[in-house]
Image (tube, rainbow, N blue to C red; front, side):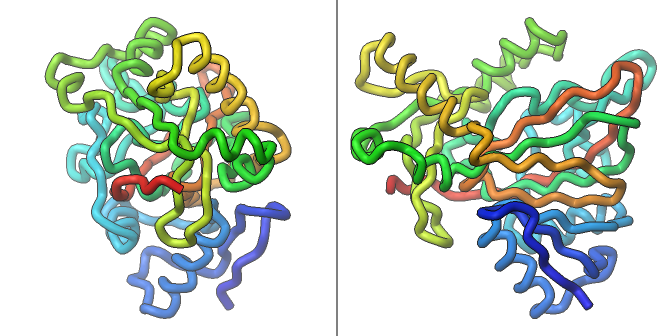
Amino acid sequence: MPDIRALHPHFAAEAVGYDLSEDLDGAAFAALRDAFERHSVLVIRDQDITPAEHVRFSRRLGPLEIHVMRQFTLPDHPEVLRVSNEREEGRPVGLADAGRYWHSDLSYLAEPSLGSGLLARRLPSQGGDTLFASQHLAYDNLPESLRQRLHGLWAEHSYPYRADIQSARSGRPPLSDAQRAAVPPVIHPVVRRHDATGRPALFVNEGFTTRILDLPDAESRELLDILFAVATDDAVTYRHAWRPGDLVLWDNRAVQHLATPYPEGETRIMHRTTVKGSTPLAA
């Protein structure tokens, strides 16, 4: 019997007894979607599925994105991004350093991602956990005076900003001029309202948020540092230790995440789909 079980007192749950290699009926899919929206992070256990089945299930949540670094997507299924340290003929075929900083996927788009689905295909012997931080809880934990200050503020998000850092830090291939032009900086509210639940959530992250508009640079930096610390505090985080076959859905409107290191020389292969979202609404 399929079941949903809590993994954290305030968010994150696991779903057991589901087989996504089959096309779920309406009631089963509705139960998963409801759990996803209520818990923000949903771990669907024991999935042995093909890329086509991964895409089929993910597409039921909404239209899918194709990552701007298309050289790291599956040739036959460009909706699937390879998050891995695989190399072919000496060249990387996946984003080995993906997610090594706190971020919300695709917050740098005018219509940021609704959610992501990461499937564990091959895991290292240790490490490689993913941390998730609830931005609903982070907002709730702010002092009332700071919460009031944030409403009405807007921040810039930029993928080229992060890509340049990663290129210098880890040797990730730099963006081409065409890729850079495809993802210009965008502006989003510092506090967004979840369009399914109505709950407010912080919507700034150290990965892609560069500045808060209409504030002096020093004041913007100081406020962002405060928010980044609250947004990723231990009190609002869940640590996921991966098992083979885990498909983890997370709600990019409600959580940030961070990938942790694993032993150098070991292989980690993950496949990610990303569901398109809508323009964030200010809370």
